[in-house]
Structure formats: structure tokens, C-alpha cells
Image 1 (cartoon, rainbow, N blue to C red):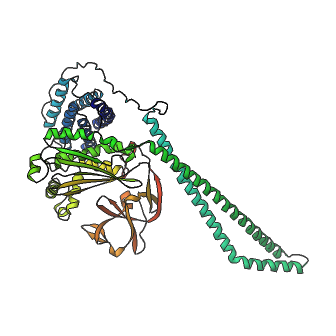
Image 2 (tube, rainbow, N blue to C red; image 1 turned 135 degrees about the vertical axis):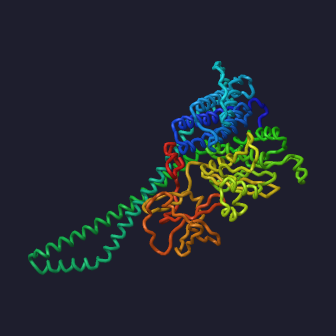
Image 3 (spheres, helix red, strand yellow; image 1 turned 90 degrees about the horizontal axis):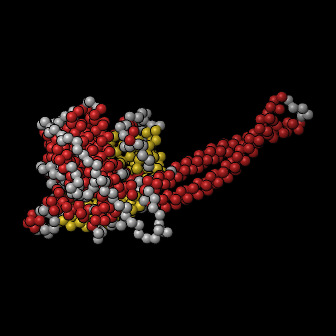
Length: 595
């Protein structure tokens, strides 16, 4: 923590401005798209997207105590929740209001001094009142006349560099990111080099096969050659047949010498290519490691604002909570850190808002009046980090979660009867599921944890929940330490080849056809005494995998948290290093592509 609160706040505000601009840009682009789509079915995904952006922006604003932004985002959330349920409808007047609200949020982001008094409160109150009226289907108040004044934007000063200027240099982060991306392209050279070595090895094998075939007929060839030589000796002139045969034999002699020479050259070439390949791999790995270290930051860099957030929430709710952070010095990829801050903040808020009891209730249960939230960070292996967020609150009421899931149609009564307590807990990660009867500025909509799950899985990680009723809840996140590459298991689907993250592969099995049974219209297979759903991956991708011959099929069992599923594949080639590259938002609507 910083001794100078003002300097600390300026650092938080600098980070908030960047984040707020991204959220506002997404909201504005969503509104533009909505205005062009007349059909509700087309509008719903974008309504959901804008809804989530407003929710995330509200949380970010709350973390730096920008209550004006929190208030307007809360009104936007309520309105978009009504739009999702069909209780409110979009119309030109409402679009004008929503764009006005988006502009105001952007202006509030530029002037980030909390409660500075420089905000046009009349305009802010009017927009909030109109949003509330639109949510209820009431006539919206007339907006006040535009009397906006040009406001002085209060700049966020750059933090001063510690250390000697001769030993340090300041460069824009964008240039550093560009350098990292270009360095990561060296992985393609590694992959290409490996393929070249493989091709030469294959060619050498083909020549070896030829030599082995030649050895099989070499004795017969020598016998024919000797016969021809003896005939030539016994006859002064060659007949036509003997001449042709002699030519063939001579060609075979030349052919043998030629391929023997080619094999020797190919062995030499293979050795050269392998040496070059290993040299490129060594240089690329070294350079990439150095480059990655430039963007590896301690996890504490995103956790330093959490104590203030918890303090503010506790003040609002009358609760007493201590935050304990362990392992904050573990470093991970800056890009992953930036994406991880919001999910962690959502979880911590939920721990306090939903999990932590009031002080008198804790004392009555024999607990200390002050609760605790523990963020524990540990490195699991060379490229995995595990984050656990633990609270000693009231735990998760499994029966209440199941009842909420049933009432909201997320599961059927038949499905609910077969769910274990652990599986029920994972349901709180579903969008729209909430056990809270009150919608507050912090939670109650059943949206925050769904966003957490999507972001964590989007980063190639897993999230799971453990809880003991009346005692504690633990959120467990397992994530890669870098985003550049991952180990991939190469699988075949007909003629197509795909890579699956090896970390998600539990195992590869061969399933006898008679072992596949159908339960409720779906195929399942018994794996170590537990039924696992069996899905044909080619059907998921809409590919033709050809006929399934034989009395068994190959399947790869994938895991995500506590969930397991077996996918039928044509074959498994092995493992390889995979370079991760974004496909761009232009492919975000293409089926089965997470752009």
C-alpha cells in the first residue's frame, strides 16, 4: 500500500480511465448495432452484451468511488434487464436517451475526481429519472436544455520514474506489446522447422524402404548380370535381346549407385537441418523467454486496490472483513492480469455481499465478529497458477440454489434430482441464476459470476466452487501463466486436424460399441464407474468424419472444472506446441469460434 493516498488514487484512476473507455466504446457500438436490428431475436445477444458491459463498468467505477457513474450504470442495468425480459421495448426516443447516457458516462470518465462537484447534476439526475421511467414503461421526463460548458479535463499525472535515468528508458506499452507479438511469431519458425525435419525423415525412410526392396532382388540381379557377361564372352556379337537386357542391367547398376549416393547425401542433409532446427529452437526459446519476462508482473499489481474496495463495501453494509493476500509476488503475463482483475473483483464482492454475515450474526454462530477473505496464489507447475478466494462466511445454501435453478428453468426436476451438491454449486456460474431477493448495486442479478466463468475459460483456465454450509466458500481458479503458447493434443476428425489443449485432456480411451448405452436419448459410456456423456465431435463441428468401422471408437475425455465429457474422434496424432493468435471480432459470430 502507498503512504500517499492521493498518489495511490491517481494510479487507480489512471487504470480506470483506460478500462472505462473500453466499456463505453463497447456500449456505444452495441447501441449502434441495436438501432439497425428490427427483430427481437437479433437484438437479444447484443442486449445481453451491453447489459454485461454496463455491469462491468459499474464495478470498475465503484472500485474508485465514482458514485455518479455507478448510479447511471445501475439504471442502465435495470433497463437492459427489463429489455431482456421483454418488459420494455426499444424505440427511437429510448435510443436518444441511451446515447445521451453513454456520452455522459464518457464525460464522467474524463473527469475522474470523485465527488468533485463539477458534474452537471441536473443532467445526471434527469437521465437517471428517464432511464427509470423507461424501465417502468412510464412517459420519460423532458430532457433539460443543452447548456453544457466546456470542462477542463483534469489530467492524471504520470508516475515519476525511480532510479537513475541512465539505467532506465520509458517506452509506450503499445510498442512493448508489438515487440512481444513479433517475438512470438518465432514459434511459427519452430513449428515449420519441425515439419521440415519430419519431411526429410520421411523421405529418408522411403529411400531406406527402396534399398531394402533392392536388397531382396539383388541376388537375382547379380545372377542375370553374370549370365549376360558369360554370354558376351562366348559370343562375338550380341543378339538384340541380349543388348536390351544388358542395358537394363546397366541401368540397374547405375540406379543402385545413384540411390546409394542420394541416401548418403540425405543423411548429411538431415543432420544439417536438424542442427539448424535445434539452433533456431534454442535461440527462439531464449528470446521469447526474455521477451515474456518484460510483460510478467506480480499479481499484487492488480490486488493493491482490493483493500479499499472491501473497506467501502463493508462501510456500506455494516460488515467487518479483513483481506489477507498470500503469494502476491508470483508473476504472470500482463495481458492475463488485465483480463483477470474484473473476475477477481466480482468474486470478492460476492464473498462479502452474499457470503459474509453481519457481526452480531457471526458472534451468535460462535465466529469472530470480523470475517476474513483470503486470496491465495500458488504456482502449480511451470505454466500454471492457482488462485483461491476463500471466505469464512455462511457458505452456499445448496437447496436454495437448486430451487432458484428450477424456478428459473435452468434445470428440470429430473435433472435436479440427479445432481450432486458439488454439481449444484457450479450452477451459480450460470447467467441469470441468483438466490438473492434484493437487487443491489453490488449483486443480485445472477450475472457477475457468469461473466467470471466466461472470462476465466476464455483465458484457457478453469473455475470451480467448494463450500461448507455455515462455514466457508472457496472459489478455485486455475490459469496459464502466459497466453502465448500452450501444449496441444493433435486429433483427427476425418480428414481434418485439430488441436485440443493438453491441460484439458484427462485421457484417451477406446470404447467398445456394445459399451455405449443411451440414457434419456443421449449416449453415455462408463468410465471408471462413472457415466460420462459421449458426443461425436464431428457432429458438433458439422463435419463428415466418414463411416465408423470396427467394433470400437476412439474417444478423448475432456475436463473443465468438475465437468467431464467424452468426444469421439477419428484418431490422436500426439502432442505439439501451439501458438495462440486472436482471430479478430469479425469472426465472433461464426459457430464454434471464440474470437
